[in-house]
Picture 1: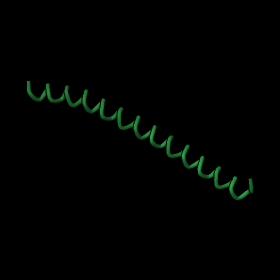
Picture 2: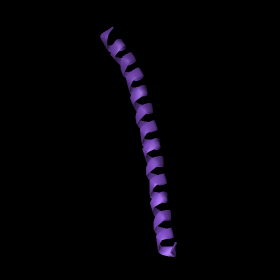
Picture 3: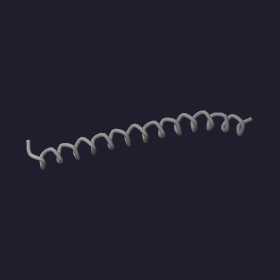
Length: 50
C-alpha cells in the first residue's frame, strides 16, 4: 500500500465521518425545532382560538 493510496483512504474516511456528523447534528436540530414548533404552535393556536 503506497503512501498516496493511504492518504486517499484517510481523506475519504475523514470526509465520511464529517458528513455523518453533520447529518446527525442537522437531523437532531431539525427534529428538535420541529417538535418545539409543533408543541409551541399547538399552544399558540389554542390561545388564538380561545
